[in-house]
Amino acid sequence: MKRIWLSRRDIDGGRILRIDLVDVSYSYHPGTPLEKLAIRRINLSIEEGETLLVLGKTGSGKSTLLQIIASLLEPQNGTVLYDGVHKRGYEIRRRIGFAFQMPEDQFFAENVFEEVAFAFRNFFPGRDPKPFVEKALNLVGMDLESIGNRSPFTLSGGEGRRVALASILVHDPEVLVLDEPLVMLDKKGKEMILDALKRWKSLGKTLIIATHDLDWLLPIADRTVLMENGKILLNTDVRSFLKQNLKSFTTSKSKVYAELLRKNIDPFSMTYDDLIKYVCWGESFEAR
Image (cartoon, rainbow, N blue to C red; front, side, top):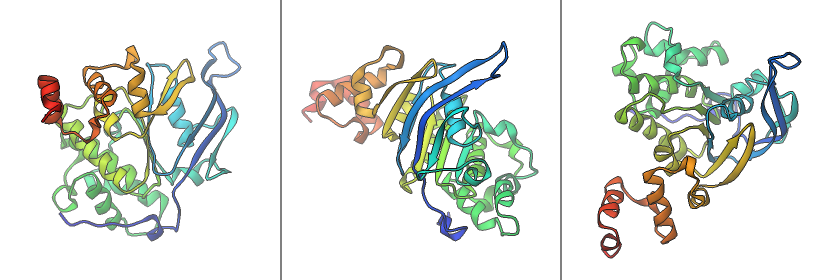
């Protein structure tokens, strides 16, 4: 596979973003009997190059928070600062890649090339999208020559999700914001997306993910934010989060992670096979 690496400077000389939410609140249907406060008085800073997981039960405010970060919603109270400056709308959207849940459901183009090129043509009319489409597909582990002419409607679940991801990477954003990127995918599909996210992370760019798939995404995360009823209950690094042993966010694998951390063993440097061996052999594995 031919590798192509282009930076935003190849497009418009932009830079990576630091994002600060300051006392942000948002309500749906304000001033009506249907008014619902979705998030309240959120204060949150997201560092350049950080991978942040946003956790919480359905209705906790995760999706609203992500849409405000991506400037798709404007907070009714408080402000969002990008590199210390208040910006909004198109000015910031072209620097942030955002995907709703199951973005492949919104496919419309005749082939994969046109599907991925669509956003680039909107943001940079008159520019040749081909090298940027090729780069975006490369980032998600795909090759333009082999897949570019295929209909996006013939792709498997994992392939479709990767093409949808490429379509928001094509304009070379500094920040990637994803709402449940692994939902409704089988194991192979999740592995495909996780590999693509690792490639993105390796570029030193910012990644913000709302998810319930902790076992898959904790190993690539730097920090977790736990939301409930529109508020942030917990904001901590991944290792501290695991040591909290929160019932609603504890899985068999996260218990193993937490146990290893208590023994000063880094579980995120271990292969999946090593984790299985640890579960099966316990102390005898540690002695190896």
